[in-house]
Length: 210
Image (cartoon, rainbow, N blue to C red; front, side, top):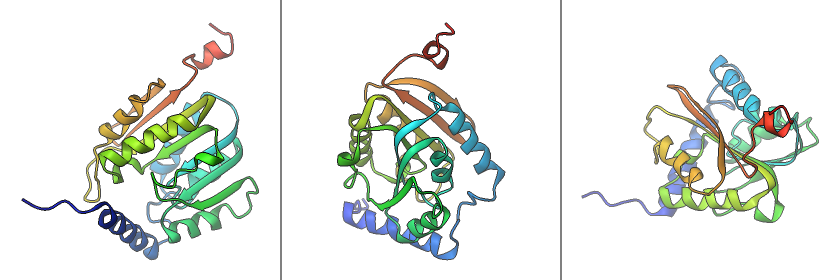
């Protein structure tokens, strides 16, 4: 039987993985060039039930392309990553955006509870790097940090890959178990996007259309 890596070893391995990726390119996932990524971002933004948000949190911001898009819809965006090179890329991308701050957070330990409540939290393409216990801690931290009308978004790649620690369905199941109401579920072969809200009403209900 193969021994499981300790949490510290697993975290060090994840950091080395990302530092290698961003050492080779400031945008290793092609967030700024691939139509797949641009389209996914637009779907995510369209799924948000409010036109605008006051205080948003985006952990695992990577190269900062989604961060920049969120900044157009939010008064303040706190973005974070635990990779120094990823943060440098995000800081370069958002340097002209005065409503964005990029911080160093390793999740779930560094969840910025004291900077909430947040009315939008976007957890995109990071949950599957965590083990089940860490993912459960993160999901509950997100739910607890939401404002009274807060919105939680998860968007994740579905196919398997070597660095994956959790299946995407398991990541989303932890968010579903927080007691928030799922208001959007968009599934494709490539990715799964879901939105959970404290307010269970649809956009049409919120606007008095139905």
